[in-house]
Image (cartoon, rainbow, N blue to C red; front, top):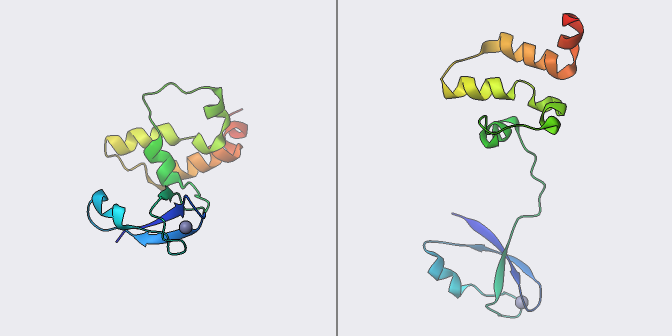
Length: 112
Ligand SMILES: [Zn+2]
C-alpha cells in the first residue's frame, strides 16, 4: 500500500496518507490539523544513497560521456558491465577484481 507524505498549504503540517486506487480518491485527503484539503505531495526527506545498481540502471551506454564521467572512478568499468548485462554475459569475479583495481588506481600502476 503506497504511503505518501503531504504538506498542508494552509498550516504547513506534513502528514502521511495511504493512497489507494485512482488519483481521484486523493480529493478526500485532508489536513489532520486544520482540515484543509489543500495538500501538496512532498518527497520523503531521507537521503537517497545511490547504489551501484541504480547507477547502472540510469547509465546510458549510448550517450557520449564527458571528462567528468571518466574522472569519477566509480564509473570505471561501468560501461563494460552495462554492455555485458545487455548481452547477458557474466563477467565473473575476475572482472570485478579488475574493476576494483582500476578504481583504486592500482591497475594503471601495474601497466606502466
Ligand atoms: Zn493544515
